[in-house]
Image 1 (spheres, rainbow, N blue to C red):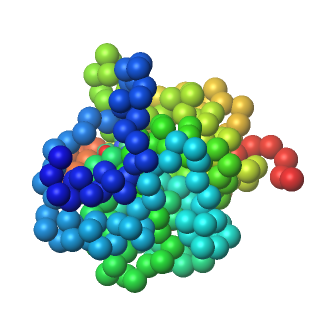
Image 2 (cartoon, rainbow, N blue to C red):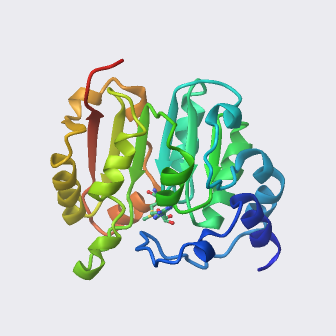
Length: 248
Ligand SMILES: C[S@@+](CC[C@H](N)C(=O)[O-])C[C@H]1O[C@@H](n2cnc3c(N)ncnc32)[C@H](O)[C@@H]1O
């Protein structure tokens, strides 16, 4: 384990769960080697202690992490974090939590946080499935975003897709009625899969673009993977859902 990576891992984890979990879980990602630039490494070194929350199997207090109680948005798989940083810059009264396993992406996001002087962003560099299961059971998010998750196009890999009934059920547990779930993809078979998974959920109701036209939390900028999809001639679909049920 080399310098920066080792230090990020020390910030990231209170232990290495891969050594403790005997079962081989199906993961929605493959750890890419991806080169860390010196600027990203410096950002992790200097800003990591403030903005990166360690994975904690026993749960965490987002109130303590952000130092306030504000509406919160969760983004899963933020990639290089540009969308999250742009949203956080537009909505300083909202707190943004991002989860991403790709370490250079975390470094890139921290550079954006620094450039805009943001205080309303925190990130966790760990498998989102475990973070949601172990760390966030008591959390409530006004919006949850999953933008351009890995499409896993081959049939034998479909089980690796992030959007699955079990994950959607867990996400529903993190939202009060009225909460927004925003998915986006440039892979139409995945959009159909998302439609099917969410149609089978009793916890979310499909919204139209018009339903969310005036919702600040529904806005997103173009993302890096979206630009790649557009260059390849892909169409893009945004899917919006509302957490159903009676408000308390
Ligand atoms: C195709 S990229 C999209 C990145 C970004 N949302 C965008 O639109 O540019 C998907 C990202 O999700 C991350 N990812 C996939 N599964 C994850 C998981 N279980 N936990 C955390 N991050 C995950 C990957 O590392 C990757 O950066």
